[in-house]
Image (cartoon, rainbow, N blue to C red; front, side):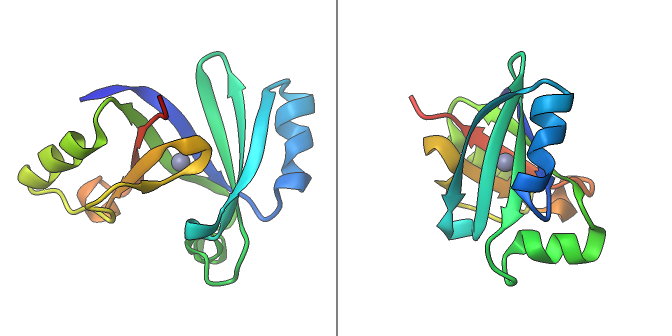
Length: 134
Ligand code: ZN
């Protein structure tokens, strides 16, 4: 069902403040940033090899990422796995008894379709399924 880890999501107070660490000190390639209004976040992607890091900055105090930062501070927010067919991946998890945050895929950054598994069904790690744009 899963192909690989697509990216690791990291919650940050300010993308601009942390970009120099990832891009300049670690030497990762900056792939761009965009706002995902549906999730009230600004997202920046960097890559090393075929692995990506997704920086998440809240754009509103009621953003889920803002609440995460309040509770836990900056740090790893979720792990995203690439799937070929997100609808069948969701259907399989649901039929296996998993609780989903998203029972229907929604739009992520860079034209992807994403769905989150509820942390109660993913052993405490917020888990994202991610189908890339063709
Ligand atoms: Zn993500």
